[in-house]
Length: 265
Length: 199
Image (cartoon, rainbow over all chains, first blue to last red; front, side, top):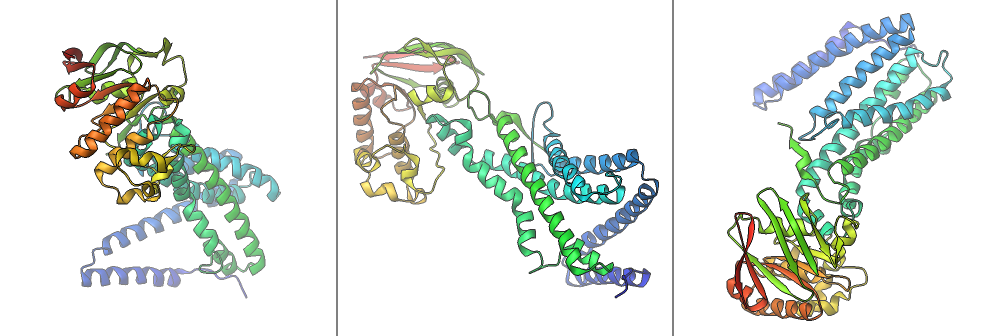
């Protein structure tokens, strides 16, 4: 089979289907049409712009340009993590904690992985940018959800946590259940993604590679590599952000310090 | 002996107080006067100035966990972190033997917390705070939701604890109860402890 390319008629068809959804929503008074259209337009514009930027980056192959693109992606992800928080940690680094952990977890996982791929040069934009992007996107979700769940849960469970502290438990013991619950929540989406891969859904990247003419087994191997990388990075990010958040909402005297949380809006 | 020296936080304090082993002192005061805040400071659950000491050993000089293992705070609102009652007690506690002391059946150890009434939770919260190493009990309205029989059981338990050498700082709105239990009674007013009565 020849590689399949997506032409204007194909794009127009997909767009028409979204418009049809919006019309259906308007007819039935469901109220989701505007959100669908805005998101679809935003997605199309963003991806086309990214396509153009990547075309320039791929053509130049400059490590500085690669680093710049990755830095912008990381900054946007860090901002998104902060924007998702219903409560924020006060003090230095309170708003950037999640972003910093997500960036660190992504770098710690992706940089060694690049070495195993053997790309030449190792910073080849065709490898670094997609890999860093997909890893950061997934870690962003895990870290953002985990941090938000943690601050919500620790506030809701204040009485139970303080009851344990009052009985002589350390802050680590008193927050053990909350930490476990939050970590489970943070990695749920990547665990589900791995569990469903191939059986319930064909992952997007693998689908794209097959459509582009790649042999299915090779596409599956690439998809496995990426999913494992995403799982490792997300696990690391969630563990890191929860550990730091526990440290920030407690003090050295094993007290719960909810005064260090403020409502985001 | 529990010794408080210039303990202060927000609008409460500085508070100086000494409570001997086996002694019960009561603290009353208007809502919002800071009675719970005072107990929380003694338990070192909130940042504060001043210090508390047990037998001359400063709270600040020992790990907070060790302090709270000796100086136990029982909040007015009890907290629960596990589904089953027995999970909230120390691993070596004989829960089934402990429960009847406050009128609860021994099998309540296996009950889910969700089936407990407010009064049952209140009594269980007091029972789980007891233990061989406990030297001071800081009790915030321990009988506020209880019927007369259970109030009597709790008071008998507190007398037994005092007889065993445990000091009790009792926050209570019930003047009659304070008169029955406390050797010294205080009122928290404008952040300061004032003597409310002596027996």
